[in-house]
Each structure stands twice: as structure tokens, then as C-alpha cells.
Amino acid sequence: MNTNQKSPSDSGANHPTGNSCNPLLGHAISHAATLIGLFAIVLWGFMAGLVRLVSESFGATLGSALIYTVGGMLLLIVRRPKPISQAPRKYLVAGGLMFIAYETSISLSIGLATTNAQSVEVSLVNYLWPTLLVLMTAAVSHKRGSVSEALPGAIVATVGVAMAVGGENLDVQEAVANIASNPLPYALAFAGAFIWAIYATVTPSMSDGYDGTTIFFCCVAVVLWIIHFVSGDGLPAVAPGIGGYISLLACAASIAGGYACWGYGMLHGSMETLAIGSYATPLFSTASSTLLLGVTLGMPFWIGVALVVVGSLINVWFARRR
Image (cartoon, rainbow, N blue to C red; front, top):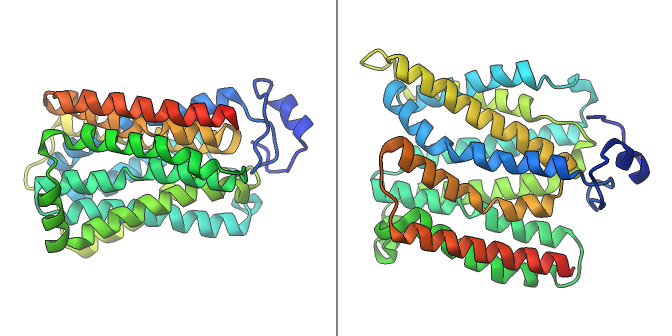
């Protein structure tokens, strides 16, 4: 990636697969970069189940710190960033703070959930980020009526996500009672969803082509180590077996690789396509978790999948019309 701004014609030469212009970045969109960005959704799909396995072996706070430490080391090997002096200061500060705030808020929200039902509900709140991202991407496109056109598909897909993730365990009255009794994790999850949607929407135009994913990821590792030591959690009571270390490496590769792919897709691909494709994140996550944790998928999941597909197709149809 070149940190110098290029004209649309220059960018098109560097990205022969691009055939349209990103209005936020001012260069041609690469279809290959969009596909790389979409691959992040597949990698993130394994995150929930692998994080659970790592937490069972190392504990919640230590496991999270280790995941991001190993992931940061992997990124430094395969995605070593350009000299930090080349990065726009506004991008480093604003983007870094949003990245760290998102990861921290999500980690804390899951940790503060006191029951399995609350964990599912907090996850659902976090998965509002694809909807928020679709709406924000439409808003910044400056195309007349784009937000109102994106809204129907967003609603249908969000209902599908709720059914796919919540399944038969989702009870609206119970959810309201849980929020009233323990509002902090829900507030943190919603704040995280909102922050990530803003991050994905605004940072590409701030970056001037600089990819700070590796730097931000390593900063998150530092924050998680601080949280671990402040929490007073020590080493696991039982030494992790080889399976625990394999899960740790796989989880770190899944999360770090997902962020690397997403960061590249944001800078060089179609943000509109990535936003719509992000609806698949909770579906991949739920499906992979059932495989890793030995849970059976019920009919609500498949109904939810169908609704997500319908909602995404509605968004795609409106996007093509624009």
C-alpha cells in the first residue's frame, strides 16, 4: 500500500480489477481487495467458539491477553506496518482509540454478563454493528435517499441475526428484565457496535492509504494485559494441555487474520459491499461455534439465515439502483 494519494487513473493502474471509484478514498475500487475484506467475515466466524475454548484453558482475562499478544506477533511477521512516521496523526489517534475502545468494550461486556442468557443477548447487541455500518455507509455516500433505501434490508437482516443467534432461547420479556437488572454489559456492547461502525466508515478517508491494523492490534494486547493484572486473575489452576495451545494459536490467527483482511478491504475495496457482507459475520460465528462446541443448529437458525440473505439482497438491489 502506498501512503501517497493517487489520482483515480493511477489507482486504476495499480488495481486492474477495480471498475468503480470509492467516493471516500478517491481511487478505483479493487474487486480482489473486496474479496479479501469479505474473507475476514469467514475468519471472524471461528472467533466465538475458539475464544470460548481458550477461556476454558487459560481463563477469561489471561486468555484474551494471550490471544491478542500472539495475534499481534503474527501480524508483525506477515503484516509489518510501514514506519509510523508515515501515518497521518489524526488517523493514528482517532483510529487507534476507536479500535481499542471497541475491543475493550466487547471484552468487558461479555465478562460482565452474569448468565448464559445475558451472554447471548449481549452478543446480539454487539451484532448490531453490521446494520449500523450499512446505514452509516449509505449516509456518507451522499446519495439522495440512500439511508431510507438501506433501512428495509437492514431491518430484515437484523431480525434474521436475532433469530439465528438467539434461536429458541431468545425471550423478549426476559431480555428486558435482564437489561433492567444488569444494564452495563448491554450499554458496553451497544457502544462497541456503534464505535466499530464509525471506525469502519470514517477511518479509510483519514488513513491516506496507511494501514494501522497491526499497531492498533498490539495496543489492544497491552490494554488487555493491564486489565488482566488489575483484575487480580492469576494463572489457570490446571496447566493447559496441547489442545489449549492449539486453540490459542488458531484463535489468534483467526482474529488477527480477520482484522488484517478487513483493514485491507476497507482501504482498497468496496465499503458498501463489505458493509452488506458483514451481515454474515454472526451466521458464520454461530455455525462454527456449534461445530467447535458440539451444539446442534435448530430451525430458528435457518430461518434467520434466510432472513439475512433476503435483507442483504434488498440492500444489494437498492445499491445497484443507485
